[in-house]
Length: 215
Image 1 (cartoon, rainbow, N blue to C red):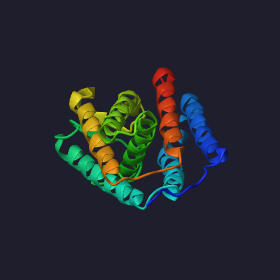
Image 2 (cartoon, one colour):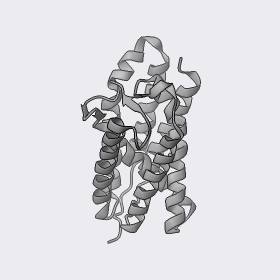
Image 3 (cartoon, rainbow, N blue to C red):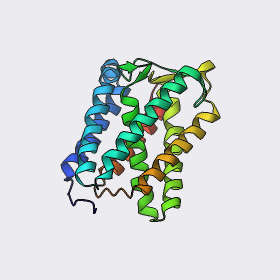
Image 4 (tube, rainbow, N blue to C red):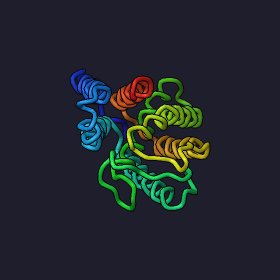
């Protein structure tokens, strides 16, 4: 089935950039910092739902199947990871990301979906090859995590045993993103909307700026 044609107006994309720009200012301005941290789960949920809506409306039927599967699998892997340390290394989630189930924030699987979806959107601009696109997607997700990890610790998203980010965490990110991207391509999912591309780009800029200036 062909992906449905839908145009995402500049308003929705601009809204994402405005939200994260406000987030940057709020995180860097001390009097607003605690409020920004408190609003993190709601912000990720709101912006994620916007991306989900427009991605779904412009996609083939298999999109929701892929998104649901990715959410469930990544959440389960996170639970196993937190409980055993076998997947990502020894780590625990802080309070910033909100409500938890089995010590894992419910929002975390949601964010996995959109990091991988955004990575796929970028990779498909580079190549239409099934395997190459999947590998590029995994590499983009890997780079995203390289930037995310140091600032995530400062924001109390999560913390690592002895404060050391293990290499296996980055390898796990690459492998998980690769498998999910392969599934996306295997199911022949097509998403016409580019909003997921903008979403990962604005998050990347957000974390880079905080990594440089957050104290």
